[in-house]
Image 1: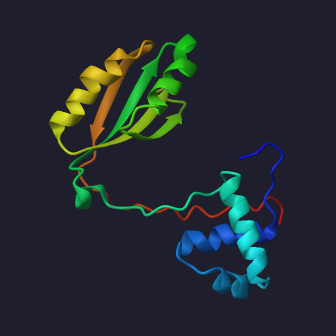
Image 2: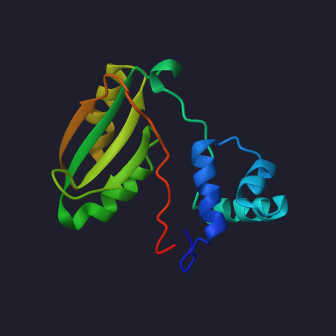
Image 3: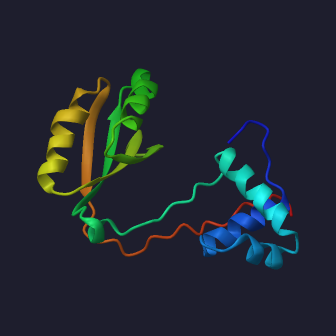
Length: 157
């Protein structure tokens, strides 16, 4: 998000509505919020341009051929965290990267079509990244809930 960018009430409402129904039309959002369709359209594209929201189809990985989704915790030398983050972000199979506190310094989420493909990634790709001192791979057996309805922080409203 651009520095200094703040969400107004209408933009927050747009986000809330899209979290409930990502296919909601600008006209329907305008009616629910009480503004014009043009206002919704302008603010929607501003949210996209500023990187506040991304519109995507979220699929169940098992249903589209990714039989081995994994979450991998990485422990990293403190002086190498930025370097490791940059390299891990660039790996094709890595779909989510989070700098964390707790047991791991970085947690990544990846999707593989097989255990063999996952093993190849861990053994040949992750092991090449200087600064990673340990990995812990958890295979996801089933996805019980997948929701992106986080709401928005109202911040005094």
